[in-house]
Amino acid sequence: MNTDASHRPYTYVRRPLVEPDWRRLPGWRGVGDAQWRDARWQRAHCVKNARELRAVVGDLLQDSFYADLAADVERFATMSMLIPPQMLNVMAPQAGSDPASFTEAFMADPVRRYMLPVHSDRHPRWPSHPRAQRDSLHEAEMWAVEGLTHRYPTKVLAELVPTCPQYCGHCTRMDLVGTSTPQVVKTRLVLKPADRQELMLDYLKRTPGVRDVVVSGGDVANVPWPRLETFVLRLLELESVRDIRLATKALVGLPQHWLQPGVVEGMARIAGLARRRGVNLAVHTHANHVRSVTPLVAEAARALLDAGVRDVRNQGVLLRGVNTTPADLLDLCFALQGEAGILPYYLYLCDMIPNAEHWRIPVHRAQRLQEAIMGYLPGYATPRIVCDVPYAGKRWVHQVVEYDRERGISYWAGSHGTGLDRDGPQDRRFPFYDPIDTLPESGRRWWADGEGRP
Picture: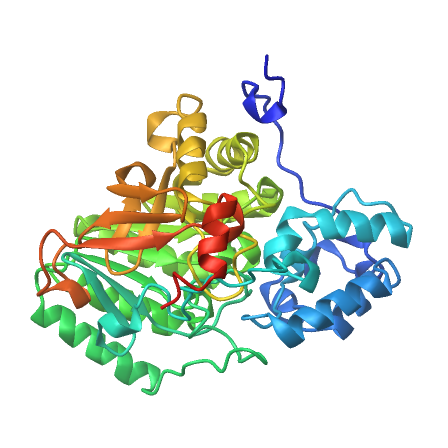
């Protein structure tokens, strides 16, 4: 009889959300509630390097951690460090106060693992898959105009800004978003923001077949509110646009931004107009672990819903060492749906960007996770686990057409006739690749011998 915890039925226990006490960290002992709730203070005190991290945690982290961090910055990091206090505060909230136990808890923390990766996290043999690419979904190749990806027949992605209030190590847009690292010289947007937005709006006027616009970046929280409001109001003038989704990790990483009176009032204005015009206005955010869902996150989500936003939805990413057990996912989903009013929506397989193999899981494991979480949540709040297949688009993990488990190559049905595959054969299949270290020995040997390299 299998008694492994991963195979035991999940038992639901309602747990209140918790805001860890930031005063436990030496650098924030004098920070009051008003400062903590101030979005400007949060942005001004983001941790951007090891020196600033030391200023917050003092002697709690041992030198071995900083050496590990420095080695990662030098060899592997695809994203620069940018961690708001809100996000740093949820890491290792119950750690002991002596350096050895704090460092151990900090290293093991699931939020730390994707927000602040270190060298020892990376896979020693396969830090990158041979088929990994900087723009792994080829979004820039599908730009109708600069920053506007037209990948699906009725939907577009509008990248208004190439920055975020926080940088996640597994960022799917690591080619464009953030500042350069020793490994990655970032692609740069060329046009001025106003000119880029004019071109986007002009394209949408000329393309009435598009009804759904995801406004993203980067993160819309980094777009000055007047500019963002103006852009959304102009989208609402287009009769063909029926869905608008604002994408912001800041709802979780910097909820203070979405609680600012000017932002809340502005959201009420655009939400009211959207409702009067019959347009669905939603906010999409990004939480990967239950610890990041705090009372402030719930307060910000409620403020958006009270302002008239139809839905606040979560799009998480499956990451090894973070959330790839049924219990991890269900804890996250119950906190989101039951306590914060955020709808669990999608869980993505981590994309095939460089130096991400230690995070990724194979398709068959994602399939088992989807099966394991079925039946616990209401149907409308059960997230769909998807694989974002290059050129093909999002596919539910059970839609795989063919799967070579030995070599870790899955094949998926062709695209919708948009983007680069517009003129391709309708029965074309597109490959996706499991992480090599999860393959049987024969499959690992096949890749090691160079058989699968481009």
